[in-house]
Structure formats: C-alpha cells, structure tokens
Length: 189
Ligand code: FES
Ligand code: FES
Image 1 (cartoon, protein in one colour):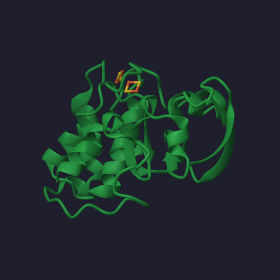
Image 2: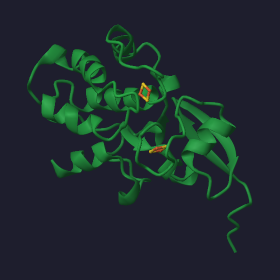
Image 3: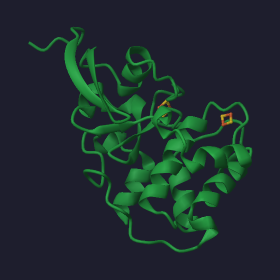
C-alpha cells in the first residue's frame, strides 16, 4: 500500500539542473523547492492557489507551486525566480519600482517571464489577463504593469502567435484544478 508519509527518491529538473530529492507523495512542489532545495524565492502565501506568490514556471508556463505535488513535476522543467538571473524583467521591476514589500515579486516575475516568452509582443489585454492571476497586497499593480509592459515589445500593441513551450504548451503534471490562471487563459485562445 502506498504510504503518504514515507519519503521516496525522486529526480527533478530545476533551473536546468538535475536534482535528487527524497519527498513524500503529499509534498507540494512549493514545499520541496523551499525546504529541500533551499530555493526560497517562491513564497508561501495563501497556499490555496489564489495569490500567486508561489508561482514557478513548469515547461515554460506559470504554475502555482502550492497546488502541485512534487511527484507531478518529475519529467518536467521547473524554473524558479533563482533561475531568472540576468533577465530584463528583473531590471524592469527595479526601474519601475514594481514592488513595495516584495512578497509578491517573485511570482509576478515568473508570470512576466513566461508571458514574454510566449507572447513577446503581447497586447495590453493579454498582459492584463496573465497578470490577473497574481495578487499584490501592497497594490502596486500600476507599477508592475509598467514594468512588464516595458519588456513586451516596448509597448507594441500587437500579439503574435504564442511560442511553443519547451516541451508542451501546458505543463502536463498540473491538473486543471491547479492550472495557473494564465494557463487557463492560454488554453481558451
Ligand atoms: S501560495 Fe498563494 S497561490 Fe500558492
Ligand atoms: S509588493 Fe507587497 S505584496 Fe506586492
């Protein structure tokens, strides 16, 4: 019988590196990233799929890691904010003062990074749609929007066909109930 408390060896790919971990079947990806790998950029907020503070990218699309089991990430590419070093969106957040306390920032950065890859020239509506998945309790939405807008074709108001995610258009380990809102919006197009 499967034990939900017994740890099992699992291999994950995080920020381009193969990482071995002994995780319980019920461990969330958020828990494993933070407590096993020390990658604390993804933040525990609501832990209920609502706030987006825990957002990471799986196969190039944003996913709320509090709603994903570690085991579901096996065989997929997980990217955390620690893997974003040198990306323009980080400088854009600083330049546009797109955070106050900063608790939401890593989640928004991951959404923005995925959006930039999928829709480099996203129109305003597409950008707004994607950013709606995350919450900033300090209400810095205007600045966040300005930062993201600044890296999207420098304000062009056109959409181009979404680029294919690295392996799949949507991260397969994540069931519909746990799909990031941006992923849902993507699926509707
Ligand atoms: S912690 Fe709020 S959505 Fe994951
Ligand atoms: S800057 Fe504080 S929650 Fe967004």
